[in-house]
Image (tube, rainbow, N blue to C red; front, side):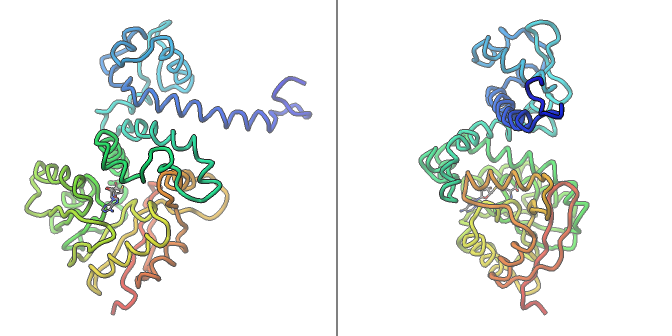
Length: 344
Ligand code: SAH
């Protein structure tokens, strides 16, 4: 019986487990090369590893070993011994690719360090991030402009990939004033205003995030139709919208805080208003789903959680809102449309 085979000659459960464990090493290699900016240094075509190491301030032999692993995953291509280029897949690691995932993977380098300490979350159910980095997630980002820039870019890149599916799935054109609560860099709201000329928008986020977004709004020529309002998610939210968006907000928070945000939305909107909770919903059944892995990320970073539709419905009910319908966008994100429970 050869190693890695069970008594019946098939691959053993042990090999399968060790293979799963190796996935961590591939993922970390990917995070490291993303954080070092290796793909951008290959924009002009394949380069010898020594030259690439000099361009990315990395150790040549070590970089070559990381690239060898990732060449095995078809991210890089070793065109001749010691000379690496990007594959079709690897091009998405470039920061200037229109569908780039660079910021998300570079930010994952920082996230991964918190996963190394995540026994704390397993023991307590709390976020691990504050132990790794000495401050809660968003507080840390406020004090670390480079990490903050990467996080906001990661969110923007992820949201950009889903925007077309959201626009196809829901008629935003019925709204007069769309309030994007925690709208980040404003990318989604600007796309909606672009796609639906009759709409106006309010971007709401933390002061430093809104300051950057305001420039984008101006550059898009949409300052006349889009306000940018700075404030606290747990304070008063901009009133008078007829459509409130919470995209990737509730999953950041434990139930009590999530209900507080929903109550804030309920207070800000009139009885005729609608609220869209846009999240990856945990599906029924045992199959793998990106919501189930993202759930671990928001747990370790923030003490947050991904939820099932009934779990969101329960939070909405506590905040005086009732779920009206759920739309699967086909991108992995769902839209849960809610209205005030006392709406006519
Ligand atoms: N909706 C965007 C961004 C999601 S990330 C998207 O889907 O791409 C979560 C957002 O919540 C960030 O933009 C962050 O700045 C904002 N946020 C976190 N805590 C906040 C607070 N206390 N007040 C206002 N905004 C907050």
